[in-house]
Image (spheres, rainbow, N blue to C red):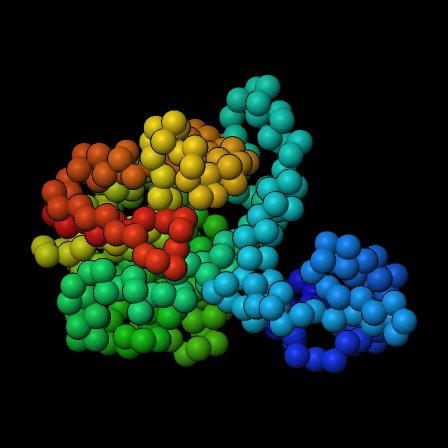
Length: 327
């Protein structure tokens, strides 16, 4: 058991414990812990010994339901449900009046997205994702310039800055709160080769970038932008000759009929309705939505000026496609 913000995983190897002992060890109220445990018991997640009045989390359940289980923690994605549910009244009004729900209305959304990123991005960043771009590791080891746009709290960027101290990294995100977390973590780690900037990416296509980047990345960040086409055009302009854009985004079809059998499609359309589409509309944006689709993404990349676009899938990630785009 853990409180909000506590990153410790439940110890699946500990002995069965009583409700009172668990409440004392976690500093939580026993009555609430008891009712919560009851839900987990009848849900067959926690085992209950009625004679001893003890509770135990089986190791095979802990392997998929605690933070210690990352990158196989199914509970990480489940956190989206209460976060998105917190804006239900706002969303109902949008159905009636139009418009959207702004990012600021979503409590903890960046915490949840950062933890989700641990599952799909950070766990495979060096082993599977970067190798999709030939020679990029050698470039970063020698000293390159890279940017991560829509970086959130910057966890991927911080890992890159640690791994490649000769390279310079820039993280950009709309959320001041998320950027503040990234800056604080960079200071704590003593990283001087990473910079975080809080700004709207809607006019990124207008930026003058005389220095340019060797590598630009976006991880699940394009489809909820106000002006995704402008962002892609800006990325194209910001790349140095020979530079590359690596984009992770949802692996879906732009044709609804083709998504009937896609894994996670119902959840992803729901997340789109309750977050990705509406936060874009809140900025007067395009409202592209989570399930914009690989075919539309490829067309938009070509429209932005990318001539060589390769699409990859990785075995650890049933949700996303990985695009490697060059000029």
